Image 1 (tube, rainbow, N blue to C red):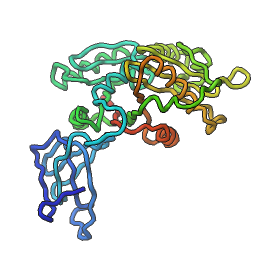
Image 2 (image 1 turned 60 degrees about the vertical axis):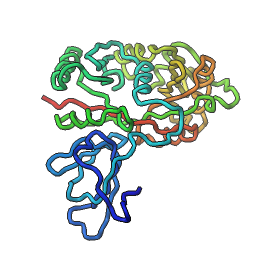
Image 3 (image 1 turned 90 degrees about the horizontal axis):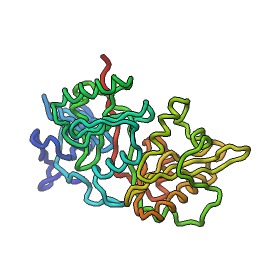
Image 4 (image 1 turned 30 degrees about the vertical axis):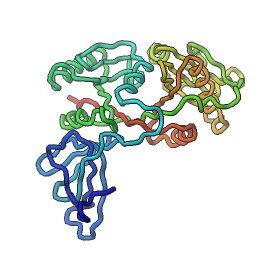
Length: 334
């Protein structure tokens, strides 16, 4: 990471660069005489009262005292090179929303309010894809009333790590006391390599999930949520469900894929604990990818929590790379 000009460290950012992607080097602590530094890269969301706020790619906010800065510069809004299918954050966010549709939606300017009885954050949160058309506080109040009528908390999904993502909105929400939760990473890969293996007769595909599939998906835990889940899971442009039957009517593994133009979105890939490390997750994804390829898709995406190391390792082996992050902001109580 190069900060020097003529061999000297240089601070080439100011408060005028709020909203831009920056790279800064700072002392690890006030008055650190040992010369220990830390580097931070992200979007500069504020520079107020001698403190810089920077939102990292994964959505985590960092506050740095101006007095501890030793170097800084503006860097490209997105990395110059990114492996995997080319796509903007906006495109993938919209595709992912269509592939996991809420049971009920409402428009608030460029925002979409989504509800599905509380089944998953993606189907029960505000999706901000533009200006809400009213001041932010009024937009949040309107969203609060809409979700309150449905007995749901107010969550706003914010994306991070791209040139068209929501770091500034996240910072505004944080200043209003909205807390961050449920961090995730959206990853992409070429689709064809996922299916580059012999067909696996253990995997059965269907257009709708049956009771066995729903019973194997851990997020479906009650009759009420099962009804809401079915609306979300069965929605989408073209949806496939994969099942690996086990013994005595049990299910060993499940998965879901939503095909939308060139994109195939994978979700709900789960293997029962006793059958893990037997290649079932890879087999499920391969058969779903084969079905998506037959419909003309060429690129794959999925979403994973950063601390799910087992899933991340699997997706690494299958060629998935990080595209951007997102998380939710929850309204303060009261």
